[in-house]
Image (cartoon, rainbow, N blue to C red; front, side, top):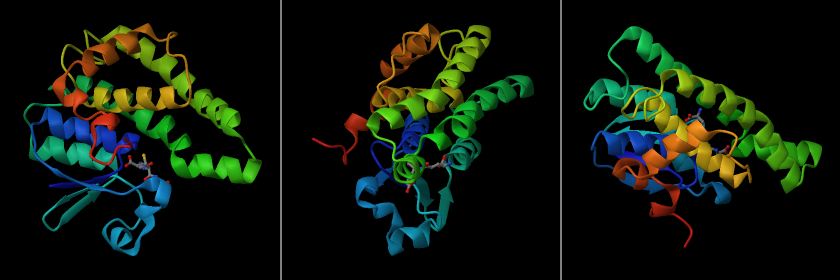
Length: 211
Ligand SMILES: N[C@@H](CCC(=O)N[C@@H](CS)C(=O)NCC(=O)O)C(=O)O
């Protein structure tokens, strides 16, 4: 498999974590978003949306990290990243969607570029914009983890919810956020960063990372 991604992309980071948790080997094809490499003709032929990640497996190209994660779960079911019971699976998917649908899309590169160019936002303005969407999402996650977590976001083993949470926390720090209001999130992050699958997925450990 080839993961088309970028070291700092949160959506690519989610997929790296899942691939590692499932013990799957993959090659990395890096597309530097700062240079617009996600918009080259060759890459857009692969992913018409011109965004990362995309996961290539022979003739198959899966785009959109939620679709990639679900595809990995269906094709490589063990270890499972969704609980067995339908009710529990719904809780994990809700946590993942909270981040994937309601936080991350408001803070990705093209939206930040637009608030700079359309509204003249400076870095402080961009950071405030990002924090304004991350903070209420983290408040809700803190409550959900209090309800469902037992060491991880849901239960006592890593799930898809953690694949979303850890990259979002990395991103929040890049926006200069103080994460101390969310102690449960910090506890889960501490556990995750000590786990080899999460540690080797970290942006700083990717082949295309800045020196
Ligand atoms: N919903 C998509 C979001 C993907 C996304 O936002 N990718 C960003 C990097 S994290 C990107 O490629 N941005 C490039 C651009 O906006 O031009 C997913 O989960 O895969």
